Length: 119
Length: 109
Image 1 (spheres, helix red, strand yellow):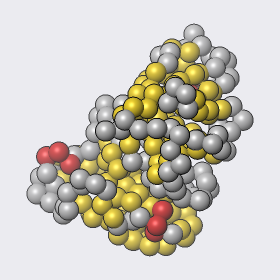
Image 2 (cartoon, chains in turn green, blue):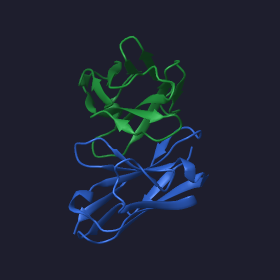
Image 3 (cartoon, rainbow over the protein chains, first blue to last red):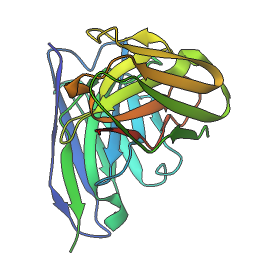
Image 4 (cartoon, each protein chain N blue to C red):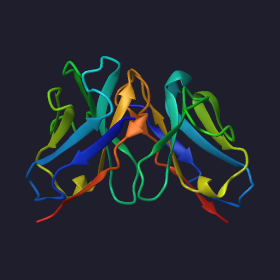
C-alpha cells in the first residue's frame, strides 16, 4: 500500500528557505507512471498546487510560486523534496505531498505537515 | 489560468437529504480534467470523482459527478453522517497551473 510522509522543520524564519521532504513507501518515485507533487493549504483556507515532478526530473510549477520554488527527486532514497525561498507569513500552511498518475488528479496524499513562518 | 468558483460556500443539510454542489470554470474546459475531493478536519483531501463523472476506487455510489464546458456538479444523493465535510473541485491535465475551487462546506443542519 502506497504511503507518503512529509518531514521537515515546522518553524521557519521570514526570508529564509522552507525545505520539506516526502518519503514514499510501498511504491517507487522512479515509476514512469506517476508525477509527484506538493500542495499547500493555509490555515482555514483552500488548496494551492505548488508544483510536481516526474522521475526524470521534469518539473512543473505554479507560476505564482515559480520564482521561489524548486522541487527535486532523489530516486536512491525514494524521496522528493520542495524548497521555497524568501518565505513570509503568507507561506504559513499545511504542506501536503501527493501522487498523480500521469495527467490525472491526486490519488494518494501524505498526512500533511504544518509549517509556520515566524521570527 | 482556469479559475474555479464553487457555490454555495456553505450548505446546511440534514442526514438523508440530497446535496448539490456547483463548480464553475472561468473558461470552457474538458470534462476529462475535472475532479472532486472531500476533506475532513485535520485530514488530507480524498479523491472522490475524476473525469467529471468517474468515481475513484472505493467511493460509494451516492456520490456522482456531472457537467461539461464550464459548469460541473457534485451530487450526494443521500447524506450520511460521514459526508459532512468540505468539498473541492480541481482542474488538472495539460492546462497549467492545476487549480482548485475555494471549497464548499457541507454542514449538519
